Image: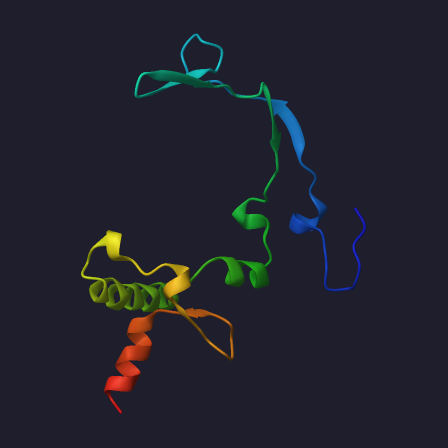
Length: 126
């Protein structure tokens, strides 16, 4: 494929996917087919015998710069956990009430999605 511009690079340093046989494990003797029953009808799905595999580097192969972007340190983890607790509490501690992306605000500076609870608290304190 052709890449235009200096900011566009192939993902994973140009690693190319390869094809290998599907590792069938736990599907029984039906050759990878699985039956699904739905109200009186039976539907079957089948898996292709070969799959496309994209190799990914081991964690030790990433540069420090990339590691910092991919993984969070303990301070970021704690900050995220605290933020998630505030957001989940605002949703009544019920996963069925979780605010989806469409219900979020968009930060005009960063473009990040912002949970409404953070904006509501801002208005209440003023």
